[in-house]
Length: 132
Image (cartoon, rainbow, N blue to C red; front, side):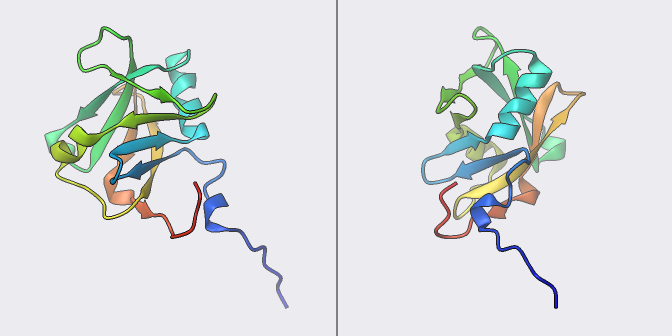
């Protein structure tokens, strides 16, 4: 007989770099590990980002840390010491993509772009009743 550890869905992504996208609020929530990854590569706290897209790689977008005066700079809202949120209404139009419900996307660092890369083809729908 094999025993199994029961883990609620809301805890499955702990320790991984993810973002959550809420289409109703047009908001992106950068989870703790994702924020730490961006902060580590940027070398300091991240207050502003540029959202980058590429027509040839239409399933990707990037969050590039930047200064306040950079073209297209968007201020990230500080929701806690280790998470940030960002308005992404224009991104939905640019990518011609809007999920039906809240989704999670894995985040990884792209050294070439010097930005966090997200792949919308890897979107995971959140299950009803989770609080993350």
